[in-house]
Image (spheres, helix red, strand yellow):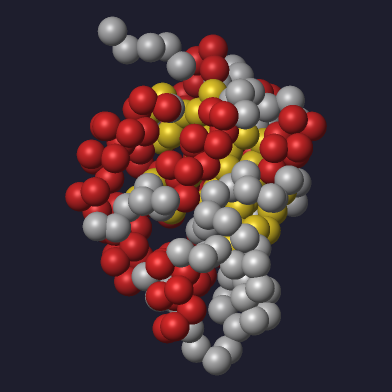
Length: 204
């Protein structure tokens, strides 16, 4: 029997967390062509944009988590992924701005991360959510491979309920998304579609 998520979606208690929807991740300057293709094929950015509209209209909190590297990369995460990206990086600084389709607006909170792989690691995101008295975290963006699942787990570890709109996340390769959602995400978060969240916010 499906669970009614409406009690968890009271707008003032919700925080929509937009994860790494940046030019150098899913935009024109990305070094991750497979992820860019997955995002484009799924129409993910348009769906995230629509969910952002609903969140702003309802009064839900909106937080952007971006990845920013210091000059020389001191403190950067020591992972195979980050090492590959460092080797292929050009001489010019990466464009880490949020892509225009889902750009922040006045009142949104942008939190930059210079180390680690998830939204909560040394970022102050938890303090911002608690200041807002958020109880439900809704992560969107990329990717299901690492950032979304890691951020969801860390949110649960901090006592938040997590709801993942499956049409507002992506994975590389695209076929990885379905088993990740079925066998991992659904055990730590409630899964739904973005329109169901919008409907709950409109009803509220």
